[in-house]
Amino acid sequence: MSLKQTITDDMKAAMKAGEKDRLKVVRLLLADIKRVEVDTRSELDDASVLSVIEKAVKQRRDSIKQFTDGGRKDLADIEQAEIEIISAYLPEQLSDAEIDALVDAVIAETGAESIRDMGKVMGAIKNKAAGRADMGAVGARVKARLA
Image (cartoon, rainbow, N blue to C red; front, side, top):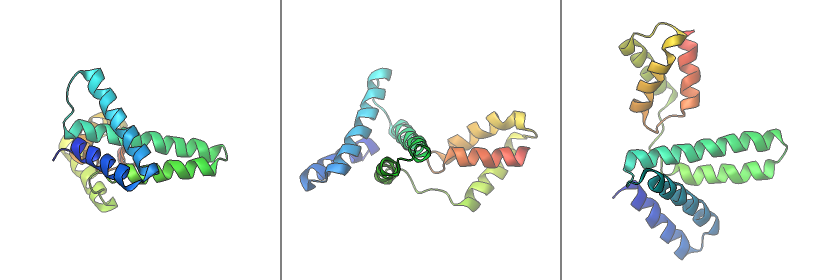
């Protein structure tokens, strides 16, 4: 079953169970997927749907930071709850040790030596990690290794 179909089935289940908060988040996620499909005029595969999900999580993390800085913990808590619902559709996240090993392997593969090679390293890591790591945290690790 495709990831998009799984999300659609979860939306139906949330409707039947009367889970209003979960239903709202899943509907927003499906709307994001549909918007990308309309923009690209094609049916999204699982990798593309995963990309949309990652973007939704990133947007909510950014919102949490802004709400926290603005003293709106109540809104930050809502965004965090949405992240937890959306994250259920992401594959299992890599551990810190696995991320470090992946960073080291990609740096060795690409022959990266300085911070100027960061784009090359991040591109390769993004392909290999595919939704299993927060790319912001990975970027900080790559930057520290190359600096």
